[in-house]
Image (tube, chains in turn orange, blue, yellow, green):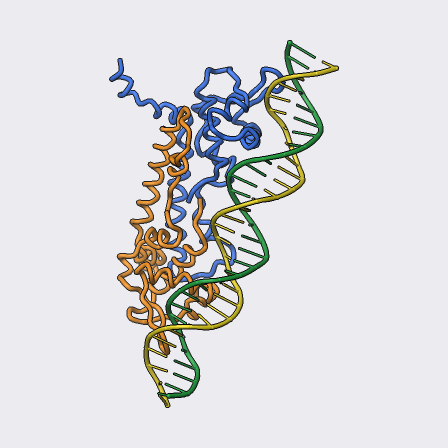
Length: 145
Length: 145
DNA sequence: TCATTCCCGACTAGGTTGATAGGGAATGTG
DNA sequence: CACATTCCCTATCAACCTAGTCGGGAATGA
């Protein structure tokens, strides 16, 4: 019950880009340094994010990456799905073709489908913008004023 | 975001045992046939379940397995945890030692911890007894009378 | 004594993951 | 045009994990 490094690194990259000034492009090199992911590995991930319509890129001198749409429209689920294929799919184990019927098999599947839905919803609802704002909670800022 | 075959097969075995008359023992062979899992593989799983205090066993002629405690006290989470180690632990990826700080890293971790809790709670709450009863819903029974 | 049944560890084929490497294509600069 | 820069794309690989097999040992009861 975990997700891949690719997904995790993708989230890092998108968060970093979402946090930098709009219309500023960041190069792989910079993203690599901030996120702590090797340039070459990150490259593959950024490419996938681009193909998935989350980032846009520019080549040549002064090129780099930036978000292709507002951070409020990008969700954790969208990113993870892009890299890992499916989010939470417990029920497809109990559902697979060839699975025999046994006492509780139907009930089990219902349970797992419920959990799948819960998790997928939670991940699809959380936007990158929200995550960034959770980073620096308002009440703590209030104290600092 | 899925769990191992071992966990799945363990759930099958426990459900089958919970559904059979109390104090009746089932042999690996029988469990294998009903669950559709090879005898040898199932063997390992049953052994783990026994060591985990979920099943008890008896050797020799007429031996076999049975539940070591009532089905209402055995949860899906308990079984999965026994076989797979942890249930849902998304947050330990973002939490791992050596993870750098980047914009949103804290927020991300909070999100994942929330999901971890949700899933773990859901799995820890659902008992084997409940799952069995979901299999044959009461309203359908009512129709058949 | 012997068949039965669970107990236990070793082993392995095959797939997945995380990552590296190297060259190609676009783009801006002088 | 020539060239440096930066992204684009594919191939390859070692390490690890999973699902499963195998062979024998130990307890139990007839």
